Amino acid sequence: MVTSIILLNVERSKINEAAEKLAEMEGISEAYSVSGRYDIIAIARVKSNDDLADLVTNKLLKIESILKT
Image (cartoon, rainbow, N blue to C red; front, top):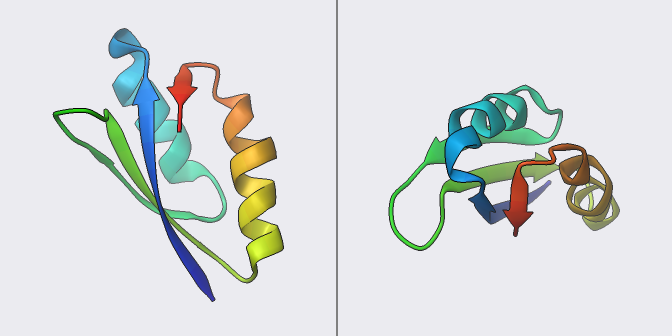
């Protein structure tokens, strides 16, 4: 099992929407809205590093409001 903490910058008006989409996504076990430099912290738990790469490079791209990870 691979666990990763992903820090995200999201469009300000869409933070709640992005957090909800993240929480529903397979591979993301938790999503937290935070203040400061980042807007959301997501905890990913996947079987392998390849699964993590797929999650970050393919699945997170589908959430258009994510500006930066």
